[in-house]
Image (cartoon, rainbow, N blue to C red; front, top):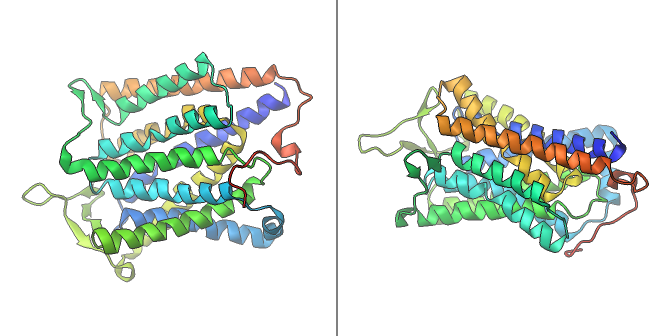
Length: 351
């Protein structure tokens, strides 16, 4: 295996680790008495704090100052915050299946945009891999079931579906804009992403609280949401200063693992992999979420979900094999992005 193939393989490992860590947020959130917006904020803000502390010890801020800032760095950070913040908001206004399906359309958008604007080629093998993982996702999140399609287009969910769709667009745009500026050090880019991601969620929380409804949290017993006599989920007004210590402990763990860890690895992966390659691995998140539900809460998986998980694994492994094999055949004379500290990639939104 030559250097290019190893470079790609490391990127796939990072993406697999990132999507696996992201899949744990649902399990953590069951034990946090806080709005999803606030949990999303901490996933980014904890990354900003952790990376800032690391930079203080290793002198990383010098590299931040030396790195040319540009519009695509700003946009990738904003969309990182919006993809998780909008998704959490959408779950309050539409079904979980609708919200999950619509945010997971994001990698498809990024693949199409990268093919058009970045000329990232996608051959028939890559297309088949993406089709396999997308179909697997539809199975595992419950959109395709033995009874048929469960995507609920009831008008009462229109607002929630629109927000969920926006979260998918934000996800796709994050992956797309992250493909620019390959000359930028990944640690520096992670720091900017965490900063602008945190700021964008603060704006989203303000909009949610003052223009939609006051921030609230779901009442849960042993991680299970509680319903009233009419079948509605029981919620309570949220106050930052009255959150129980147990919620803070779980929130900090969730923020470090599913925020700092997941998003940090994702930033590194987006530098090494093309949009189509990222898409083929991103749906691993749904497998991890289902596995944790089975392991921690005894939730059973249907036959369709098992088939969906298998499709995601097969599609992802096939993409890794095809990409590393192709990279292994490339001319070793070409240098990798990390070997070009002075290089710059095209950037349509330069500051």
